[in-house]
Each structure stands twice: as structure tokens, then as C-alpha cells.
Image (tube, rainbow, N blue to C red):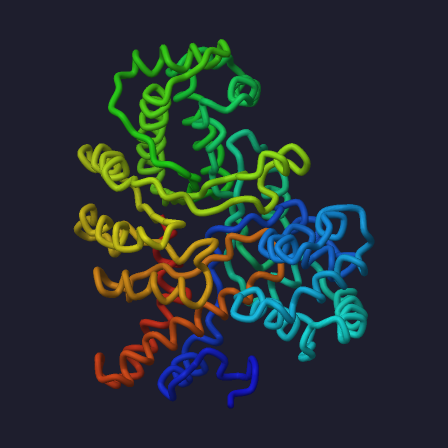
Length: 463
């Protein structure tokens, strides 16, 4: 029987162990999509307790606590830090088979040097030891200690990027750049849309009264982000929408929305598709990477939406088909040679082969892996989901040119997910070697591992 979470955790063969310990373990991290708050990085925030840094914004943990019937006061409510931590500890013994059980103990080991198993009887000891260790840590130290070399935050076009500018003037050794997230400019049916566009107009210094002005404003903000070091965008395409439309037609749709009129689904598809293509051309001109995250069904509980607001752990996997519409968007950009480097993520694992096959319809001579099938995302960034993404990509393309893992997290402790991914990766590739499906050429396979861990992303995001 194997010991829980030992040095060969998830590494089931000798080859896998050699690949991980000899090639993957010491590779730096390039985290090209996360939700870390830039202000906390610049201010080098210190945390009052493990509860704040561990449970304060972690929807994964919140969902398990709710399933266990824990009262919301101990999750997002006004219970004190120790009470919240204890409630989480009470859930842990029941999380068998869940990746959060692994992540929890990886984080305790790697950041706090704690090897005890979290449960009610150990909770107080772990809480006190972790808090004592946390007094010596800070936001920046957690990043540096995780061997992160580059990270991209997620930023709205209206952001002034003040903290990015200030951070760039410090001696912080990690490259921290903004990523352009223009979802609010595309969400034309949201009740907040007109107010958002008005605010965008204030930021750029002129009114946005039609599509020409909006395109100009988005171009101005892309220019501004580029001047502060941005090299990529990110889009939450929960449902991919696209219908061809002329600029005059989209202008009329936008003007109606700004006046508070209802927008039909057909007109929404025309507007969103038109703006996505416009943005793609801007990204291509600046040699940026665009990222499409596809297939989230958000804020399903209306009751909790009213109580807690959006993005508080009530999201699920969408199941609408999207391949044809996504293909049309990519093809419209590609038809004029204005398709930027693009990473496509799906939340529904049913769609793995869809994306793995679609990317190779739009590759480009002279550009290695221009289109990428992104890493297993959100509900899929666990052992089984990571393996399925790797299998789909390797069987339909070149997994060796894959840009690898990201955290997609608001927690400074989430960098152990890169270790988790690397262990699964080495176990998968090592298994191919052990079964005679690839030669026993450790230097070659090891170089592939290192490329996926870091090198491919470093090259991919360079202009």
C-alpha cells in the first residue's frame, strides 16, 4: 500500500518518477491566466490567518462545504476565522476522491511544512502552525517561493492598470502583466451594459454612441494595455455566438441597447460576433494571444445570486453545441490573415475532441502551435480531466507543443496545481513509454516534459 501524498504521488511507474523528479519538478512556472488581485501583489499583502488566504475566495472549497450542509455564515458569512477553518476541517474526511483533498494537503505541505492530515482532531494544531508560518509569508513571497517567473492577471478594459505600473518600478523579480478581459463590452443583454459603455466612454474621453465609437474605444484600450506590457486577452465565451452582420446593422443594434431596448437572441449573436472579430484583428495587429474560455453555465441559483452576488460558487457546465459558430469566427479572422495566436478551452469534457480537432484547421506555416487546445479547465483540472485533455490532444495533434497549465485562481496558494498537473503529465507520458507506445528515450521525453511545463509558454507569449 502506498503512503498518502509521498514523493511519488500520482507517479505509477519508474519512468514517470524519473520524468517528474529529473525533468519537471524544478521547472519554473509561467501562469498565463489567473485572477490574483494585482493590488495585493503590489502591496505585498500579509494575511491575518490561513482562513483568509485559503478560504476567503475559493469557490471550490465553498461548494464542498455547502454540499455538506454547512451554514453560509461559516462560508461567506460573519463567523470568525477559526470557526470557518474548523468547519472546513470537518468536511475534509468526507472528500475522498475529490482533488480538493489533494490540493489541500499539497498546500499544507509545500507552503507550511505541515504533513498532518486535516480533520477535526488536527484542526487546531494545523491552524496554529499554519498561522505562525504565515506570519513569515506575504503575497510576493508566496509567488517567488512557488518558482513563478511570469503571471498574467485578468483586467477589464476600463482599468487604469495603476498597480501594474507601480509594480513594474519595484525590484520584484517576477514579471506581472495585465490580460485584457472585455466581457462586459460584449454582454449586450445584461442590464448593466449601457452603464458600462458609458463608463468606458469616460475612460477614453469621448462618448460611445455607436459601433464606430465603440470600436475606436476598444482599440484605444488595447493600445493602452499594450503600452503597459499586455500580450494577451481573455474571453469568457459561456455560449459562443456568431451571425454575420454588416457594420450598419450592428450599429443599429448597439444604439437600441444603449437606449435600454430589448435585444433579440439573433441580434445579440450579430453584435457579439462582430465585436469578437474586431477584437481579434486588434490582437493580431499587436501580436497578442487571445484566449477563449467556452462553456460555463453561471450563477444558476437565483436565490444565492440575490444574496451573495455573481461568481460565488454557483456555476456549472454548459452543454450547448458551439463548433460551427466558433469555426466561423476563426475562419473570418483567418480569411484576411488576421487570426491571432489563440488558446481554446472547453468546460464540458465532451468537447475535448472538438477543440483538439478544430485547432489544426487554422495552424500557420512558420508558427509552432499557433492555435492551442488549452489545459483542462475549472471543473476538469483534476486527475481524470487532465488525463482526458492530454489524451485528446496527443491523439489528434502534438501534445509536445502544448503550452501547459495555468491556475485560473484567486488564491496565492494555488500554485501547487502546477505540481499536480506535472505529476499527471509525467505519469501519462511515462505510461506510454512503459507500455512500449513510445521509445525509452528519457532525454527526448524529458525535454518534452520541460517544454510543456514552461518553455512552450515562454516562447508562445513572446512577440
